[in-house]
Image (cartoon, rainbow, N blue to C red; front, side, top):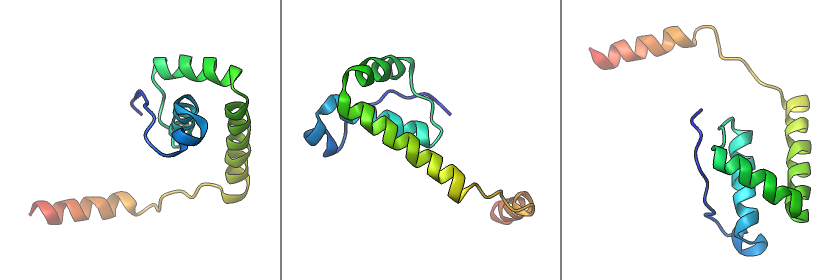
Length: 94
């Protein structure tokens, strides 16, 4: 996925400060598989090392992702999916 730079955008920033909100946003992007920008990587590392609430948040997110991987798992796409998509595209284009 394309790397994007983050900026704080929601109300969590008011509770933990804009720096912590940026770390949370970067973590959320990582969870969905979006690569952070180089600027965000540097920021994340420098801020998280010095911020106790962010360090705790990172640990909690790591536990959450581990739980999901262990108990929820990933379901594969049905084998018929490519054919279904192609059939719909052909119908739409006709």
